[in-house]
Image: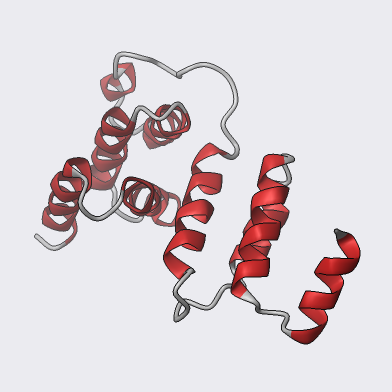
Length: 152
């Protein structure tokens, strides 16, 4: 496999099918960061770009989440300044594929401070939209809500 990869990449270091295939193998083995680096090399103009972006969104969503749901039951809202807790809760919910609850948490962080943590909540919402797909009811609903918050 390794020789094949080198041969394909020697001829075309941005070969989308090879990049996507190798990224999937790396993701399955838990090498998410390396898989993400390969997916970044897939050109946005190729037919496989949407598939590569969806896989990248899945990897970003599942990555870096440890432990239990912090302050489950939306308890973080008792302290409005604690946006870190809301962001952490959204990440845990997203990693557990609790899409609607995750989107709600991320949206609340964006409402309170759109630029918090370099726009991490907004970026997480965009990743979830990629995972769910353009026609999903949650994508439609929360994309609209996000636009209202950002462009009011």
